[in-house]
Image 1 (cartoon, rainbow, N blue to C red):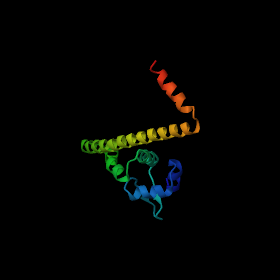
Image 2: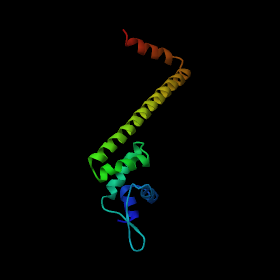
Image 3: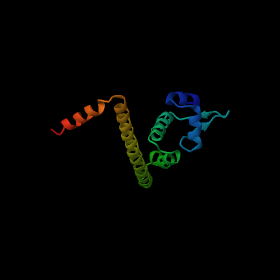
Length: 133
């Protein structure tokens, strides 16, 4: 399939596909006129790449994981597992940061509500206190 069809079927831009090729994440062949052609499995690969990007992986990290997908072997699997462990640790740290940010926003929202409703603080106290009775 040609680049436009792949872009449409995968729901990405043509520019993204060219970027993926430039990063070594996606391969194409060229026709005699220079047009890119992709194998039928390219849609699944692009969707997989998109999932990895959405999870926060960089193109470099994705490139390090793809050999395990393309040519599964003990060597590739060990390297991929190590890299995935590193990426998972980064995601865990990011999730913890996001949770702290969410908690800080909750506190700010409570403060704003209290400022808007003088009785809010009393209702909150009664609600919390009722859990101890």
